[in-house]
Amino acid sequence: MKRRPGRAAVGLAVAVAAATAVFAGVFATRLSEESQLSDSPLVGAHSPVLTLPLLDGSGEIGIPDPDAQVTVINFFASWCLECRVEHPDLLAVAEAFSDSGLRLIQVAYQDRPDDSIAFLNELGVSPLVSYASDPGSRAAIAFGVFGIPETYFIGPDGVVTARFTGPSDSLSLGHQIDLILGRGR
Image (cartoon, rainbow, N blue to C red; front, side, top):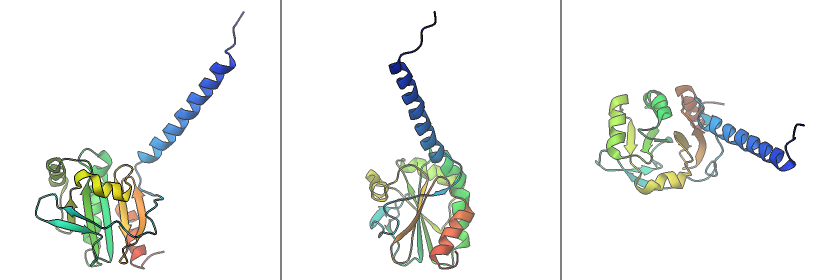
């Protein structure tokens, strides 16, 4: 005679399957290879106002940049594989929008400055980009960074207009910047 599982065992199996599906969905969206326009309590609100030290120790950078038409804040780390994927696109966008009042700031997220500098030196740096460290994760906390890479867009009025999660590509970045500049739909 075959014994059938009890209700408790069936219930536990269903609960484990449901929890696995939820976790898989969360990780799939966090680890996708495409940037995603994501909700954030900051979108539509004024940007946190911060001053961060530059990675090379040569000074500080203010967030947002009051002289910029668009400030783009990108959180990255040397240990982040998706950050490696998006890095060339960030440099390309900085170049493409260099005459449009763009200020691109890359903020090292929970990374040693030496590791971040080595990462940037390996992949390339641009004089059009400011590279900052984030002691104590002040900026990451203020922006509500959930995982990296994350990119925030700030208009000339200091209001956060969008947040991307996951690696960004030049087309998505450029489209969002064009929207802020009033050149896109």
